[in-house]
Image 1 (cartoon, rainbow, N blue to C red):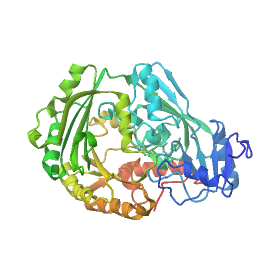
Image 2 (image 1 turned 120 degrees about the vertical axis):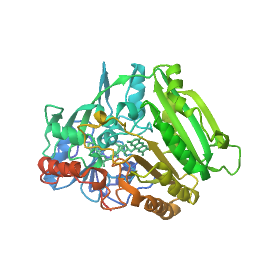
Image 3 (image 1 turned 45 degrees about the horizontal axis):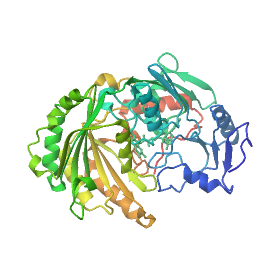
Image 4 (image 1 turned 180 degrees about the horizontal axis):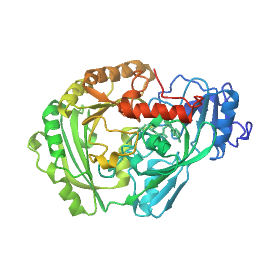
Length: 456
Ligand SMILES: Cc1cc2nc3c(=O)[nH]c(=O)nc-3n(C[C@H](O)[C@H](O)[C@H](O)COP(=O)(O)OP(=O)(O)OC[C@H]3O[C@@H](n4cnc5c(N)ncnc54)[C@H](O)[C@@H]3O)c2cc1C
C-alpha cells in the first residue's frame, strides 16, 4: 500500500491509476464479485473526516469529478466511474450512542450499529444484510428490519454533516440547510455532497422477535401470493412479510434435487412473546397449509439470526440485481417471475417480494426524497460464481425484468441496476421530487464537481 500524505495535505493514501496497488484497491471498492470495468484516475482513502474537504480541494484543483464510496455495497458498483477521483470513506467507522440518538460515520455497518444498540437496549431499522454500510443505505431511503413500523431508515436521520462541492463542511437539519437534508433522505447514489456523519433517532429494543415461515411448491405461486397478501392486510405494521421465489433451503426438504419454492416469511418485532404470537395470528390459519412443503409457526428468533440471513448474499459471489415497484398484485408479478426462476441459469438466483417494505403510514414518509412508488415491490437477483456465466446471468436478470417491467411504476434507487436503462434513476422518484433534486443539484453543485447517477 502506498505511503499516506502525498497530496493536497491528505493524511490517507492517494492511489493513482498506474500505481502497483491500484487494481487491488480499485477492485476492493466494490463488494460484489462482479467488478465493473470503470477506472477512476485517483482513489483517495480518507483517513479522517478532515481528509474529505482536502480531497474535494485536490479534485477541484485538478479538474477531476468526484465519486464517493462508504461500504461498497452498491450492486452495480456506482462508486466506480471512468476517470475522476473516488473518495473512499471506508475508514470512517465511528459510532457514538447518546441516550436515544446515535452519531455514526458512513462506513459503520448495519450489524456493527445493531450490536452497539442492542447493548444499550436500543434499535434502528438497519438493512437486512448486516454487512451493508449505513452511508449508501441511509442516503437511498433504507428499507430495513421493522421499517413497516418505523418507516424507511432515512426518516430517522434528523441531522447530517456533509462536505459540499466547494469543500465547505455544513450541518443539515430541519433549521439549517433543510433542503440538503431532504435530498439526503433518498437521493442515494446521485447525492451531491459527501456525508461524513449521520445523526439518528433511535427506538426501544423489541422484547421478542418471532417468525412464521411456509414453503410451497413454486407451481402454487398465484394461490400462495393471494392468500399471503390478503393476510398481510390484517397484520400490524410491526410484522414484516416477504415472499421469496427460490430453491428450497436444505432444512425445508429432504427431496433431492431440492425443489423450487415460494416461501412466505413473516417476522414480528414485539414487546413480548405473547404479543409476537398475537401479531402473527393472521398467518396461523392457512387455507392451503396441506400443500406446504414446510411450515414453522411462531419460532423465536434474534437480531443476530436475522443478520445471518445475509447468508443469502455471500461476499465472494457475483451479483446482478434490479427492482420494480408496481400497482399490479403480487400474484400477477410473481407468476411471471416464477417462470424466470424455473429457467434460472443458477440455483442461487432468486426473487424477493417484500410486502409494504417501507410502512403504509404517510406520516412516516414525509420530508424525504424517497417515495413508495407502488403497492407491490419485487427484487430479482441473479447470483452466480463462474465468470464464464457473467453474460448469461445478466441476460437472465434483464429478461426476467422485461416480463414485469410493462407493469412497473418505478424502481428503488438503492438496489436498481442503473446500468440497465437510462431512465432507471429518474424512475426511482416522483416527477416532482426528481425535479427538486435537479434544482438542488444545480444550486449546491453548480460546477458539476460530483458525478450524477450512473447510466448505461
Ligand atoms: C447484500 C446486500 C444487501 C442489501 N440489503 C438492503 C436492504 O435490506 N435494504 C436496503 O434499503 N438496501 C439494501 N441494499 C442496498 C444498499 O442499501 C445500497 O447498495 C447502498 O448504497 C449500500 O451502501 P454502501 O455505503 O455500502 O454503498 P457504496 O457502494 O459505498 O455507495 C453507493 C453510492 O452511494 C453514494 N454514497 C455512499 N456513501 C456516501 C456518502 N457518505 N456521501 C455521499 N454519497 C455516498 C455514492 O454515490 C455511491 O456511489 C443491500 C445491498 C447489498 C449488497
